[in-house]
Length: 116
Image (tube, rainbow, N blue to C red):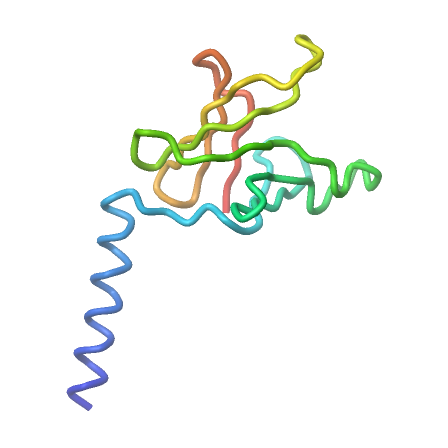
């Protein structure tokens, strides 16, 4: 019983310390904050693609972010995102906000928000 209590305490403390230090694993499924869509982030491929989209089933599988790499600042990543205005992929910054929110910024302006 004491081993279970100690193990549980260690587990709780380690999960809080991971969030406090900004060590979030952003891999997995994220909901788009403004559309009925979900993205899946696969860090082994360095990309985020459309996992589900209620309004546009043809978008499933479309790569939204590519070249995802950790940035010098904790809890942030660099990537490329397609910009229709630029007609090319542009450099964006991804920032984790408490392991349950991601903000994708282009030129200092949020262009995509994701939540878990």
